[in-house]
Image 1 (cartoon, helix red, strand yellow):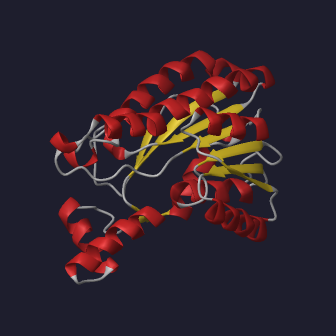
Image 2 (cartoon, helix red, strand yellow; image 1 turned 30 degrees about the horizontal axis):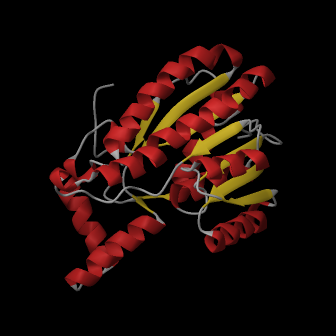
Length: 262
Protein backbone atom coordinates (compact mmCIF):
# COMPACT_ATOMS: atom_id res chain seq x y z
CA UNK A 1 0.00 0.00 0.00
CA UNK A 2 1.38 3.39 -1.00
CA UNK A 3 1.00 5.73 1.97
CA UNK A 4 1.19 8.82 -0.24
CA UNK A 5 4.08 10.53 1.53
CA UNK A 6 6.94 9.94 -0.91
CA UNK A 7 9.07 13.08 -1.12
CA UNK A 8 7.66 14.54 2.09
CA UNK A 9 10.11 15.85 4.68
CA UNK A 10 9.99 13.90 7.96
CA UNK A 11 11.66 14.76 11.27
CA UNK A 12 11.96 12.04 13.92
CA UNK A 13 13.26 13.23 17.28
CA UNK A 14 14.76 10.41 19.30
CA UNK A 15 15.10 8.32 16.17
CA UNK A 16 18.38 6.49 16.78
CA UNK A 17 16.96 3.54 18.70
CA UNK A 18 13.83 1.82 19.90
CA UNK A 19 10.38 2.90 18.74
CA UNK A 20 11.78 6.10 17.23
CA UNK A 21 14.13 4.04 15.08
CA UNK A 22 11.32 1.71 14.04
CA UNK A 23 9.23 4.69 13.03
CA UNK A 24 12.10 6.32 11.15
CA UNK A 25 12.77 3.10 9.23
CA UNK A 26 9.11 2.75 8.26
CA UNK A 27 8.91 6.34 7.05
CA UNK A 28 12.16 6.00 5.08
CA UNK A 29 10.77 2.90 3.39
CA UNK A 30 7.89 5.10 2.15
CA UNK A 31 10.33 7.43 0.42
CA UNK A 32 10.41 10.44 2.73
CA UNK A 33 13.34 12.80 3.06
CA UNK A 34 14.31 11.77 6.60
CA UNK A 35 15.89 13.79 9.40
CA UNK A 36 16.60 12.04 12.71
CA UNK A 37 17.89 13.55 15.93
CA UNK A 38 19.39 11.98 19.04
CA UNK A 39 21.97 12.81 21.69
CA UNK A 40 24.34 9.88 21.13
CA UNK A 41 26.47 10.59 18.06
CA UNK A 42 27.83 7.10 17.40
CA UNK A 43 24.48 5.30 17.59
CA UNK A 44 22.73 8.04 15.62
CA UNK A 45 25.19 7.85 12.72
CA UNK A 46 25.08 4.05 12.75
CA UNK A 47 21.28 4.14 12.57
CA UNK A 48 21.31 6.72 9.77
CA UNK A 49 23.70 4.55 7.75
CA UNK A 50 21.60 1.44 8.38
CA UNK A 51 18.43 3.16 7.19
CA UNK A 52 20.18 4.54 4.10
CA UNK A 53 21.47 1.07 3.25
CA UNK A 54 18.16 -0.70 3.83
CA UNK A 55 15.80 1.81 2.20
CA UNK A 56 17.84 4.00 -0.15
CA UNK A 57 16.35 7.07 1.52
CA UNK A 58 18.17 10.31 2.11
CA UNK A 59 18.85 10.48 5.85
CA UNK A 60 20.24 13.49 7.72
CA UNK A 61 21.38 12.81 11.31
CA UNK A 62 21.30 15.69 13.81
CA UNK A 63 23.24 15.27 17.05
CA UNK A 64 21.24 17.26 19.59
CA UNK A 65 19.22 17.03 22.79
CA UNK A 66 15.65 17.88 21.77
CA UNK A 67 14.74 18.56 25.41
CA UNK A 68 16.97 21.64 25.52
CA UNK A 69 16.51 25.06 23.92
CA UNK A 70 19.89 24.75 22.21
CA UNK A 71 19.07 21.30 20.90
CA UNK A 72 15.72 22.40 19.51
CA UNK A 73 17.36 25.35 17.77
CA UNK A 74 19.93 23.05 16.15
CA UNK A 75 17.29 20.55 15.01
CA UNK A 76 14.97 23.21 13.59
CA UNK A 77 17.87 24.93 11.84
CA UNK A 78 18.54 21.66 10.00
CA UNK A 79 14.86 20.92 9.34
CA UNK A 80 12.73 24.04 9.82
CA UNK A 81 9.72 22.98 7.78
CA UNK A 82 8.92 19.28 8.19
CA UNK A 83 5.72 17.86 6.73
CA UNK A 84 5.87 15.02 9.25
CA UNK A 85 6.97 15.33 12.87
CA UNK A 86 7.45 12.30 15.11
CA UNK A 87 8.74 12.68 18.64
CA UNK A 88 9.87 10.28 21.33
CA UNK A 89 12.49 10.05 24.05
CA UNK A 90 14.17 7.49 26.26
CA UNK A 91 11.63 6.02 28.69
CA UNK A 92 11.70 7.27 32.25
CA UNK A 93 13.09 4.91 34.87
CA UNK A 94 10.73 2.65 36.77
CA UNK A 95 9.46 4.17 40.03
CA UNK A 96 8.56 1.40 42.51
CA UNK A 97 7.86 4.03 45.21
CA UNK A 98 6.29 7.35 44.18
CA UNK A 99 7.62 8.96 47.37
CA UNK A 100 11.17 8.70 46.09
CA UNK A 101 10.58 10.76 42.93
CA UNK A 102 12.51 14.02 43.23
CA UNK A 103 11.78 17.51 41.91
CA UNK A 104 14.86 17.23 39.68
CA UNK A 105 13.45 14.05 38.13
CA UNK A 106 10.09 15.74 37.52
CA UNK A 107 11.81 18.65 35.82
CA UNK A 108 13.91 16.34 33.62
CA UNK A 109 11.00 14.25 32.42
CA UNK A 110 8.62 17.17 32.00
CA UNK A 111 11.28 18.69 29.74
CA UNK A 112 11.55 15.59 27.57
CA UNK A 113 7.99 14.25 27.73
CA UNK A 114 5.93 17.45 27.64
CA UNK A 115 7.77 20.70 26.94
CA UNK A 116 9.90 19.39 24.06
CA UNK A 117 7.02 18.04 21.93
CA UNK A 118 4.94 21.14 22.67
CA UNK A 119 7.73 23.43 21.51
CA UNK A 120 8.27 21.43 18.31
CA UNK A 121 4.56 21.54 17.56
CA UNK A 122 4.48 25.30 18.10
CA UNK A 123 7.50 25.78 15.86
CA UNK A 124 6.25 23.68 12.93
CA UNK A 125 2.46 23.53 12.87
CA UNK A 126 1.83 26.92 11.24
CA UNK A 127 4.03 25.99 8.29
CA UNK A 128 2.14 22.74 7.92
CA UNK A 129 -1.14 24.63 7.90
CA UNK A 130 0.12 27.05 5.24
CA UNK A 131 1.26 24.16 3.01
CA UNK A 132 -1.99 22.25 3.52
CA UNK A 133 -0.39 19.06 4.84
CA UNK A 134 0.99 17.98 8.19
CA UNK A 135 1.23 14.85 10.30
CA UNK A 136 2.38 14.96 13.92
CA UNK A 137 2.71 11.79 15.98
CA UNK A 138 3.88 11.74 19.58
CA UNK A 139 5.22 8.40 20.76
CA UNK A 140 3.95 8.46 24.32
CA UNK A 141 3.23 5.67 26.82
CA UNK A 142 0.31 3.50 27.80
CA UNK A 143 0.82 4.76 31.35
CA UNK A 144 -0.60 8.14 30.28
CA UNK A 145 -4.02 6.49 29.90
CA UNK A 146 -3.67 3.64 32.39
CA UNK A 147 -1.73 4.97 35.42
CA UNK A 148 0.66 2.73 37.35
CA UNK A 149 2.90 3.64 40.26
CA UNK A 150 5.81 1.96 38.50
CA UNK A 151 5.46 4.51 35.68
CA UNK A 152 4.93 7.65 37.78
CA UNK A 153 7.53 9.63 35.83
CA UNK A 154 6.21 8.44 32.45
CA UNK A 155 2.45 8.77 32.70
CA UNK A 156 1.66 12.25 34.08
CA UNK A 157 3.79 14.31 31.63
CA UNK A 158 2.43 12.33 28.67
CA UNK A 159 -1.15 12.56 29.95
CA UNK A 160 -0.73 16.33 29.89
CA UNK A 161 0.70 16.07 26.38
CA UNK A 162 -2.37 14.14 25.20
CA UNK A 163 -4.62 16.85 26.61
CA UNK A 164 -2.63 19.57 24.87
CA UNK A 165 -2.37 17.83 21.53
CA UNK A 166 -6.07 16.99 21.31
CA UNK A 167 -6.89 20.66 21.85
CA UNK A 168 -4.41 21.78 19.19
CA UNK A 169 -5.47 18.99 16.80
CA UNK A 170 -9.01 20.37 16.73
CA UNK A 171 -7.70 23.81 15.84
CA UNK A 172 -5.62 22.70 12.86
CA UNK A 173 -7.53 19.74 11.40
CA UNK A 174 -9.27 21.89 8.76
CA UNK A 175 -5.85 22.53 7.20
CA UNK A 176 -5.20 18.79 6.63
CA UNK A 177 -2.88 18.76 9.63
CA UNK A 178 -3.38 15.93 12.11
CA UNK A 179 -1.92 15.41 15.57
CA UNK A 180 -2.18 12.02 17.26
CA UNK A 181 -0.50 10.02 20.00
CA UNK A 182 0.70 6.43 20.08
CA UNK A 183 0.74 4.87 23.55
CA UNK A 184 3.07 1.85 23.57
CA UNK A 185 3.33 -0.88 26.12
CA UNK A 186 6.27 -3.27 26.32
CA UNK A 187 8.44 -3.65 23.21
CA UNK A 188 11.86 -5.11 22.56
CA UNK A 189 13.89 -1.89 22.48
CA UNK A 190 17.43 -0.95 23.44
CA UNK A 191 16.15 0.40 26.76
CA UNK A 192 14.15 -2.76 27.48
CA UNK A 193 17.16 -4.91 26.67
CA UNK A 194 19.32 -2.83 29.00
CA UNK A 195 16.85 -2.83 31.88
CA UNK A 196 15.73 -6.43 31.63
CA UNK A 197 19.26 -7.56 30.86
CA UNK A 198 20.43 -6.01 34.14
CA UNK A 199 17.51 -7.63 35.98
CA UNK A 200 18.51 -10.96 34.47
CA UNK A 201 22.10 -10.46 35.60
CA UNK A 202 20.98 -9.58 39.13
CA UNK A 203 18.69 -12.62 39.27
CA UNK A 204 21.15 -15.02 37.68
CA UNK A 205 18.85 -15.79 34.77
CA UNK A 206 18.36 -14.74 31.14
CA UNK A 207 16.78 -11.76 29.39
CA UNK A 208 14.24 -14.10 27.80
CA UNK A 209 13.21 -15.50 31.18
CA UNK A 210 12.76 -12.06 32.71
CA UNK A 211 10.58 -11.07 29.74
CA UNK A 212 8.48 -14.23 30.17
CA UNK A 213 8.05 -13.46 33.87
CA UNK A 214 6.99 -9.91 33.02
CA UNK A 215 4.46 -11.16 30.46
CA UNK A 216 2.88 -13.44 33.07
CA UNK A 217 2.93 -10.80 35.82
CA UNK A 218 1.29 -8.15 33.64
CA UNK A 219 -0.96 -10.67 31.86
CA UNK A 220 -0.19 -9.55 28.32
CA UNK A 221 -2.79 -11.31 26.13
CA UNK A 222 -0.48 -11.39 23.08
CA UNK A 223 1.98 -13.35 25.27
CA UNK A 224 4.96 -11.47 23.88
CA UNK A 225 6.58 -8.04 23.70
CA UNK A 226 6.12 -5.99 20.55
CA UNK A 227 8.94 -5.18 18.16
CA UNK A 228 10.03 -1.85 16.74
CA UNK A 229 9.21 -2.68 13.13
CA UNK A 230 5.54 -3.45 13.72
CA UNK A 231 5.25 -0.32 15.84
CA UNK A 232 6.95 1.72 13.12
CA UNK A 233 4.39 0.52 10.59
CA UNK A 234 1.58 1.89 12.76
CA UNK A 235 3.37 5.22 13.11
CA UNK A 236 3.88 5.45 9.35
CA UNK A 237 0.17 4.80 8.80
CA UNK A 238 -0.71 7.68 11.12
CA UNK A 239 1.70 9.85 9.11
CA UNK A 240 0.18 8.86 5.78
CA UNK A 241 -1.93 10.83 3.36
CA UNK A 242 -4.75 8.39 4.11
CA UNK A 243 -4.88 9.34 7.81
CA UNK A 244 -6.36 12.80 7.30
CA UNK A 245 -9.54 11.92 9.23
CA UNK A 246 -7.74 10.58 12.31
CA UNK A 247 -7.62 13.63 14.53
CA UNK A 248 -6.58 13.96 18.18
CA UNK A 249 -6.53 10.24 18.93
CA UNK A 250 -4.42 8.27 21.41
CA UNK A 251 -3.93 4.68 20.27
CA UNK A 252 -2.72 2.13 22.81
CA UNK A 253 -0.27 -0.41 21.34
CA UNK A 254 0.42 -2.89 24.13
CA UNK A 255 -0.65 -6.38 23.08
CA UNK A 256 -3.97 -6.05 24.89
CA UNK A 257 -2.75 -5.70 28.47
CA UNK A 258 -4.89 -2.58 29.05
CA UNK A 259 -8.40 -2.45 27.71
CA UNK A 260 -11.42 -0.19 27.84
CA UNK A 261 -14.63 -0.38 25.85
CA UNK A 262 -13.68 2.73 23.88
